[in-house]
Amino acid sequence: MFVTRLTLQDFRSWPELDLSLTPGCTTFVGANGNGKTNLLEAVGYLGTLGSHRVAGDGPLIRTGSTRAVIGATVVNTGRELTVDVELNAGVANRARINGSPTRRPREILGILRSVLFAPEDLALVRGDPGERRSFLDDLATVRRPRIAGVRADYDRVLRQRSALLKSAGRNPRADLSTLDVWDEHLIEHATTLLVERLRLLTELAPHVTAAYQQIAPESRPAALRYRSGIGELSTDPAVTAELLRTALAAARRKELERGVCLVGPHRDDVELLLGTNPAKGYASHGESWSFALALRLGSFTLLRSDGTDPVLLLDDVFAELDRRRRSALAAAAIDAEQVLVTAAVADDVPVELTGRRVGVVCSAAADDAVRRSSLAAESAESGASSAGSGEPS
Image (cartoon, rainbow, N blue to C red; front, side):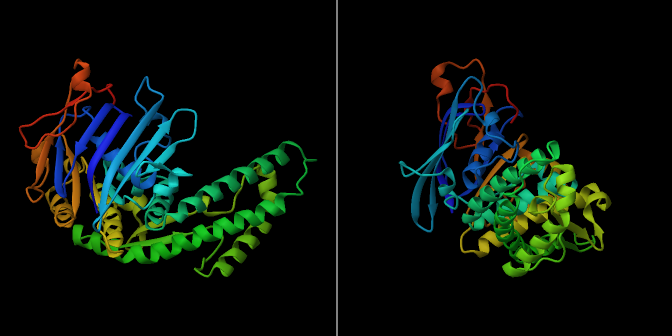
């Protein structure tokens, strides 16, 4: 799988962009603040309908604009598709496939698969459980796009049920006749999501363990374990549904007292283990980086096992890594069908990742013609103008 064309309109610091891409490795080189990361963020968005840097879409729309458009032409096993998403301030986003509108933006999921490495990945190890839940759910969605609908349905039910619990907390006489109905809706969608998480973790874990061993052979072995507050989960939907039903009944009084939903996949975690200890709180800085890399490398290997290479996005990660970890990442990337790399300093990129090099230069004083210019540099000496808004790269 590879992208042959990336187009942007009013996305982050880019007023307009029309960029031709090729298989192999392309490295975008430029000082921080010039918009390099925005390019990889745009490609990643088309694969997940989310940003690895911010929770909402608002910051993705260039300052002063009311909408942004991300488009790409993708080739997968000889088939070419063009996909674009329009991000709108205050109204629903829209998407198109080969120019035809889709009913929902999530219908484009699966057309472009990617795995993105970024400095923010350290939060997968050191951050709160929400980071790890999102990592697992995003990967599940890339593999099986229908999971996007399951997640949306679960979030909707969770909001409705939480609102009912909160109203009961404020008013002891509130009508709770519909709470049992919302319980069953929550059980239905939560069961599907939990079973998918467990199945995915079972497939992913060996790849992560192997990747960590390659990156940090002297360290303790790495492992993944799902931790749920409702007991030992099963990939049998009937068993997991019954566990949820029992846990909801047991928590009913406490939920009404606190006005929050205390049961469900939104409260679970993925434990990252080094030996018998959790990586969070016990891993050194180097071990934490190694584990974060192993999670992404394991994801790449798993997606590749499905029959096609995802696009590999390496966002300024080499500056954060020592020589051995750089080499391990480069070794995994070198035979990927397409790799897009950003770097502030060209020498940070391992020599193994040779290929096209594109200079990215921000010029806030550029005229309109330059602002709309396409980024099409073909050598290390070439440059391209980005009429940046001053947003960080």
